[in-house]
Length: 181
Image 1 (tube, rainbow, N blue to C red):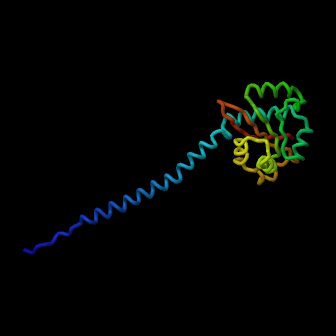
Image 2 (tube, rainbow, N blue to C red):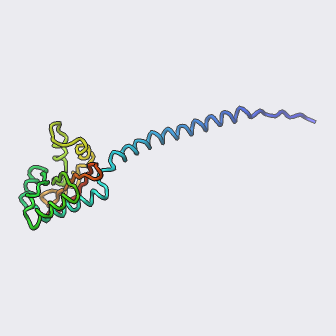
Image 3 (cartoon, rainbow, N blue to C red):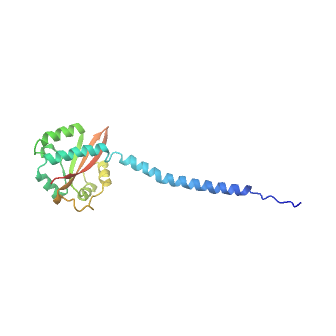
């Protein structure tokens, strides 16, 4: 009878375990480096363009369409933006009363009317001597410029409303398109 020699495979299992372990550690490190920045971005932007802020901006749009005279839109077209927080600007219809009640109910601190492309407003806000808070500057930096849509210009009647309000002791921001045709 012929004797067969057994092959020792204990070293192979050790190498295989090490390779799988390194592979698993690599996957977890990739997940860690890509997942935690996403959580940070979420934490940073959770006060921007939420359903609540879009709703608040929607009512600012409705009041702006109904209450602002055309001269305000022309001023915005020429300068690129205009602070429309002052309710005395709303001279059409019952705009003054609507503005005051809207600002009180929603705890509005600022309302801006800009051209549809916000690039001019972004340049103004980005300046070091601009009177805006750091959180507002971060929000404006977060917004796209909307400049690729060349059909939506002040000439065709498109503007944008940007609203800053306080909710739960936190400044929140929202923006929405305005069509003044």
